[in-house]
Image (cartoon, rainbow, N blue to C red; front, side, top):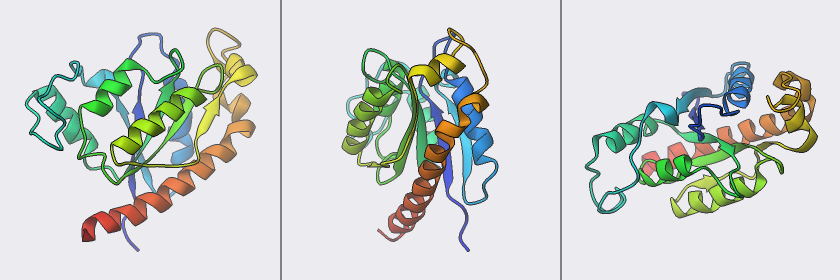
Length: 196
């Protein structure tokens, strides 16, 4: 049997008061119960990325900025990605968009999904993310996890601040479907990239 796929959970918000850690922690716990993949946390806060200012993406020209190079090195080894997506004004955070732009070849032909949150479950932001991912030659999964409406109010600090386990029955089937799909795509695409 081959090595299980390595997936990265990328936290897409850098705000000091962000909610992202709560769903990220829950997803890491869910992943720990499985043996068909590994899931590592990558936090954009740890990279201090400048605004994208390279001559081109690294598909066309080598990256110069050492912070961007460190980011590329951090994401390169993974077979697929899950983005924790906060919805800001119907889209992804500026920090996440900038991080996506700071790499290119590292994303190509790798699958991704999202754990979105916001009033509509982060759905509009996740749809924007899918379009960006396609342009980066990534493979978007149909499946994702969304926390919105009354569920968000129940677990968000501005609402009831309950643990995510309080809404687990509503979101765990989505998380399982997302994991299953990412394992399939990441395994197939890893093999295809190796033979290309």
